[in-house]
Length: 285
Image 1 (cartoon, rainbow, N blue to C red):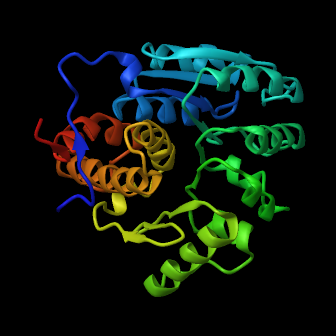
Image 2 (image 1 turned 180 degrees about the vertical axis):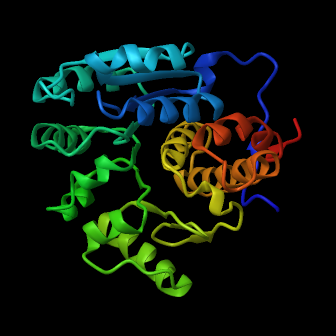
């Protein structure tokens, strides 16, 4: 299936600084896998450097699976979630990043959600907001429109329902309308996940046709958020990055399906097949 955009191949004299620094703020003691999958998605997506900011207690669970990443240990609550004291650490880490992925596996503790909101609204860089990053704004979603830098939201239908207050639907036309309305309301690019993921900006839409039901498994969205973080650095236009990311994510799922079948497919299979998905969308040098 033809990709919506092409990815320029790397110049022969490239160095890692050419492909961006992605800060992944994710994970907790209970959900270390979310941070792992997001980081691997960013690494396989071609990011030059990936730093994982996660509660210090979760580091031993994440680091062995991500030997190519850097790490920023964060103060944690007694339960193992990001604490309020982590905010200054995140602000400092973000100064060294080109884009931030915020949300996977962070949890819904009050202190954590306060930190998420404060950091997201203060951040003056492109932001991929996913999972618990979105849930942190459910009570007051319209404040997201205050952000001055690009925001890319990746909700599944339930997360969008918590933000816009409308029941989830599988109707394709309504999904398209909901994504467009959310994009206008929150001044963001919205990737409404599901069968036929919709990418919407203020003026453009893209409906993805890659992917399969085997991708309906825990962690798939975490891989997408990391991949999207990596691609944002490669495009001047975040809409192009979002459209290509969902296309590649689905294509990796289709390649994984050929090998594993739909029932046995897991999120790590998507990571494994991102390389082949990338090769298929690279433009000639």
